[in-house]
Image (cartoon, rainbow, N blue to C red; front, side):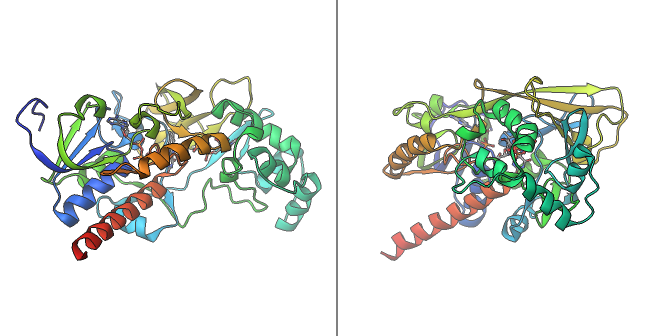
Length: 382
Ligand code: FAD
Ligand code: UDP
């Protein structure tokens, strides 16, 4: 499987750069549905991209790149992935440490009662209370506007401003509204982080699911290989690229900002460390944003437990596109270049500069596959 690249050239129909969800879904579809011969590479030493999980030295299944919780409203995405995994039902819950208390986030009726010593009993009472605090914003543009408009400045500062400044290195007023709009405000007592119709974890983990997806003799996998080092040596008809789009074009228009994180994984000599899967720390004086404990996500039983701290960082692997107008404008210039580059398809969170969850990337990759098929059909018919 790992013949040197200097060996006599094999011919591939597709070279796919990146073995995360975007690259792996396309490899699977193209091989299984069209019989194409694929070379799938990743510069990391493993498949799975950011969703990669593995057993650590203590025997705990953990996520190397931070906690990944699967949730979706798309039957199509569930049906597709279910070919490669069974599922373990799991609904994620998150508490935020605010004024010395651990309270539910998204903000709900329980949060308000706990924080302000209230006894709001109904949705209506909670809605009235929030309306009395909200500061309506006529034209909601930024991540500050969304929250201040819904819950007012005090709750905004307590839950969102510090967290967002840490996570993005920017004030919420400098970020597109879509970022904090990911977090709703509730008047009921639903304390689940997500309300999607399907919420479950791959039963044997993400890496096991990826292995099954890619288990096809037509797919050759090479990890620990950077596209930049092998691009001249691979003979492939078409390139599918899921890495950062600015890097592909050698940063021609300047660097497109991506936010990074440093992960600190720790195993503790206790069965449980915290009351829920994730605890958020919005306070500005705490250097990390959140701590997650995998045994909640995976259901694993063990006398020890593994947790991960997330420290936001400007340096390091690109994890998050940063949604704001000037970055979108720069991305559009790269996108125009991509559109006029024949033989290359750009797909995935880094290549299309979209703050997408896993299910959205699977959906995007399936749609890309369909479009590629239509294009082939059109060429054959012409
Ligand atoms: P990636 O997974 O980033 O894969 C791209 C791959 O391309 C990488 O493995 C990279 O090494 C490789 N690559 C790049 N350039 C090159 C090159 N030049 N040569 C070779 N290989 C290259 N989503 C959810 O739905 N739920 C969650 O709970 C969730 N939590 C998250 C938590 C964190 C901390 C982060 C960062 C993301 C989270 N996500 C979550 C988002 C999820 O990780 C992404 O939606 C998904 O992994 C994107 O898949 P992708 O294939 O587009 O990109
Ligand atoms: N956010 C916040 N406080 C929180 C949770 C989220 O300010 O307690 C904001 C923050 O800007 C964050 C965004 O909402 O980046 C989206 O949160 P999510 O949990 O969806 O982030 P992800 O899991 O993608 O890192």
